[in-house]
Length: 423
RNA sequence: GGAGGGAUGGCAGAGUGGUCGAUUGCGGCGGUCUCGAAAACCGUUGUCCGUUUUUAAGCGGACCGGGGGUUCGAAUCCCCCUCCCUCCGCCA
Image 1 (cartoon, chains in turn yellow, green):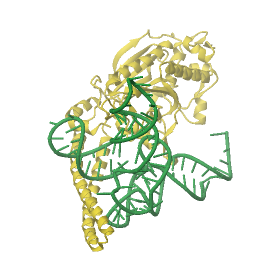
Image 2 (spheres, rainbow, N blue to C red):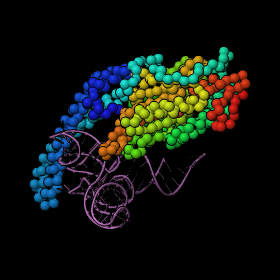
Image 3 (cartoon, protein in one colour):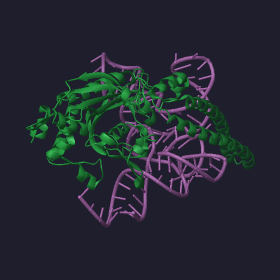
Image 4 (cartoon, chains in turn cyan, yellow):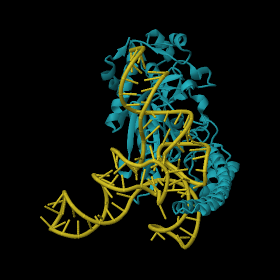
């Protein structure tokens, strides 16, 4: 949610910049400014009426104490009248604020100047590439074949138990998952992130705070009986730790890491995108979250991007980094980097990490603030990134490291798996 | 799931219809004292919205878990919800 003050003063600039996200904000922002104006006028009227009736009530109380019943009763009538007036104002005000908030929650975050205009992921901008493209050879098998061959993952079994998109990891497949999670968490700890184990279901306030609601609710699994949502990422519970919190400047940077299962409905996905591990309804991920001073959040974004890159490097995976174009940047994000690894057998790039700066967009929704040098409360900036999402890492590792003698486990991972090859 | 008790300012804890945004203690901040510190003493101490003179400050309004109601007036009375505690039941 954008700050009202900011909208008031930068309306035209915001409208212009939102075009990069293909969002036409002219009508909605004009209406917001108009409602804001109305809100302030109405509040003034209401406050004046309230102030007056408050004064009267005090007088009435005094008169009663002095035993002057009749005078008091006379004043009562005045007071009742005033109350009716102020009640009308109050009602108007409630309606105005309600509409204002509804509109405000519909405006996406303003993209950073470096975000290119574009419709879809095809227009994302390549900013970095590292390592040779892996070539496992002509006879290379895609990961779903390898998973079957070595009995690592059973997709059919998952379908039986739950449905498509819920794979069952078995034996060394399960162990590989556990090894990756431990490796990622150990790396995060080394980098100064405090580990958190969050709830996997969240309430409405939390889902709203990070921006999943009201816009993306069809992407989340919803437990109607208890009005809870299964988390699509640990970002949601972790960032919401700081909802309604006022931090001290010296708390920055707040750094948390969490492993969690993630649940996504992925309505509308189809074809090669959902083959094997490419897109799942349930998957594992280690997420890193930082809360940072507004002046430093972009340095932090670079740091987090570099951190995720470092893990890929340690796993020996070639990767590239893209800046998402406006159309592909999420509702709440101002700037997002995607990290992609090359999947040798599928011969395509797979997104394994997404690192974003939300600036004050989430903070404003969840009232995450800090006391600045002058003792004033200001909104903090929030950032998060995957470090990393497991399934596509597994896909790339299996495909790129396949040899006639089996699948080689990257050296950095061996201490965690306890085996060097899958044969 | 059933029965009961509770939710007040950073924390602890008063307040059950009338100048209560709220007694008090602790903590925090500033000061006196001191070479310095402790102790003691004095002062100060939240959040949000609006507004005025466009630093800072003053003024108006809201906020005693959340929402609604009664009343001229509610932290205090009534209703609904959430969370916490105790006991019973169930249970990984």
